[in-house]
Structures are given as structure tokens and as C-alpha cells.
Length: 81
Image 1 (tube, helix red, strand yellow):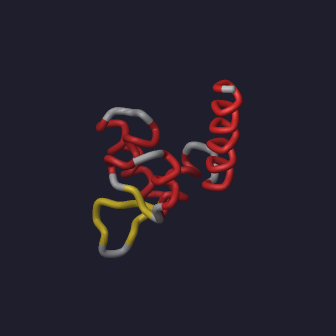
Image 2: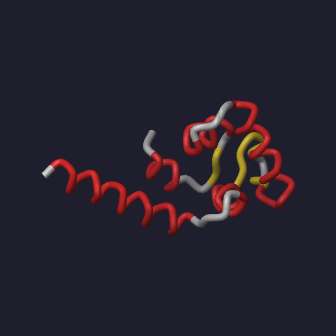
Image 3: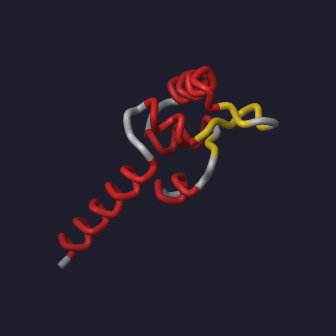
């Protein structure tokens, strides 16, 4: 799953956080628990937290991340030409 695919989701599991941030399982679990404490819990989904809350914890938003990924993709396309 790509970062853009992960950003399309409304909630993330520990594995999603790990994949998006490129961190270890322990770090991803700590981020998930912190997001839960900050109000990012998803009702009836014990192991998932709000994507927006996780992104807020790292100082960004979904829109900023999508824009950044588009810039990266455009830059890679220009490098190939």
C-alpha cells in the first residue's frame, strides 16, 4: 500500500502507522496510544485511530501530505526525462 493509499483511509492501525512513518512497531504503537489519548479513538475499532490525529501529532495535515507527495511524484517524473 502506498502512502497515498494510506492517506485515503479514515483510520490507521499500528501497521498502517508503521508503514506510513517508516518506524518500528514499538514506536508505531506508542504513536497510536498517544493519538488515542488525544481524542483519536475510533468507536468500536479498538486497534485503530484517526488519521487526522496521527498527522496532527507529527505537525502536518492530510492535505499538506497529499500536496507534498504530488510534488515528490512530479519531481521524480522530471528526473526520468
